[in-house]
Image (tube, rainbow, N blue to C red; front, top):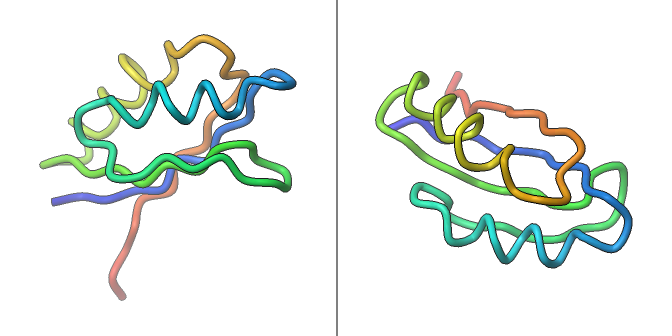
Amino acid sequence: MVQAYILIQTEVGKATAVARTIAGVPGVLTAEDVTGPYDVIVKAEAETVDELGRMVVAQVQKVEGITRTLTCPVVHL
């Protein structure tokens, strides 16, 4: 399993709606609206890095109200 944090910037006033929508995407473990430079932080998992990338591009980035995403894979050093 590959896990990642997806940091999301949204349009003004859209963070809660974006977090709720993304919480329903298969593979998403948590989706929280937060304060700071990002508006929503998502923890997601997939079988492979490629599958994770497809989820981000095909499902997460298509959610209305998102302006930018940054995907940070979890590593175990």
